[in-house]
Structures are given as structure tokens and as C-alpha cells.
Length: 248
Image (cartoon, rainbow, N blue to C red; front, side, top):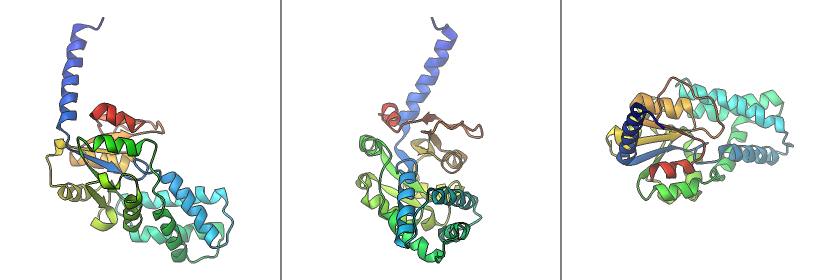
């Protein structure tokens, strides 16, 4: 039997929780790693790029690229580099490290063309977006590159359900900067903050950025990573399907 004091607390929290769910009008989704299967797209695009210059792809190339790319994107999130710098610098470092003679700019162009053609979604993403768009307006907030993201999303199964898309390279700021979220909220009509929920897999960029701006945040954590304690979230999920159970 649940003690009466605990029951009252549960009922209070449940009532607040229901109010929060009912108050949302906008769902802001991160793109890569949340809606789009970026790991799969990245691996395929990298392999095809090496094959296009006549170099046999080795599995170690992917690990090296991911390590270099992660460092550069973290620098981007801190405002230390621009998307334009990331595009070429990562391949300059990679090709030098593995000893492949190819111009970084040429390799970058080949990679981005192939990446832009990959629009695979994570499991259940299409079904979840289709279910949620009946009650909510949906926007995508991404730190990705303009050419890649617009083409991928346009080719995807969810393109017609996306009301707005905010890309860091286009707006001049990246998540988690407050300026980025200010622009994003402006693009969707500046709704009250309590009517907006951010959903993403990137703790530093999506979750901390949203929280610092005053938005509710739901952390998509399919890899079961330990939850940091520097930000309060309203929900943690390991499957996108949980959003439908929660929000509809």
C-alpha cells in the first residue's frame, strides 16, 4: 500500500506532468542521431568516397574520421570554428593521418555529395513523426551543413511533416548557443516557452542548450549513456516510440 503522503505527491506530480504534455504545441527535433540514422549514413558515405578515388576502404578509416570529426564539431558547438572550416579541415587531418594523397577539398565535396543522398531514418522515426504531427507542429533544429541537411530531409519520408528547419550554417550560430535558440523560436513564431519541447540525443548541444534557453527538454538516449547532472530534463527515452505513448 502506498503511504498517503507519497500518494498525494504522486498525484501532484502526475497532474503537473499532464499539464506539461497538454501545453506543448511545438516539438523541436534534433536531426542526426535523433531522427536520422547518421552513423549508417556517415559510414556509407565515407566508404563510397574512398572508393571513388580508387582507395580501398579500411575500417580504421571510419574510427579515425569519427575521432577527428567529433573534436571539430565540439569546437563548433563552442563557437571556436565555423561549419565552413569543419567541412575541409576534418579531411585534411584524416588524409594526412592515414597517408592518402588527395586534396581535402576534393574529398570533402565527394563525401558531402554522398552523405546528402543518405536519408535513412532511425527505427520508428517515420511512424512516430506521423503520429505526432496530428497534435503538434514539428521543427528540426540541426548543427549540420546546409547543403547536406536540406537535401537529406527533402528526400526523406518525413519531409512533408516538417513545418520548419533551422540549420546552424544558415543562421550563423550553432546549438547550444542562446542566439541559435532565439532565432529558432523566432522562426516558429515566438510561441510561449512552455509550449515548446526540445527532443535530441546530444546532451551538450540539444539538452543543455534548450534548458539554458528556458525550454523543456527530452533526452533521447538509445545507447543508455549515464545522465549528466548539469541540466534538469522532463523526460529521458531510449526509443522514439515512447514519445507517442507520452505525448498522445
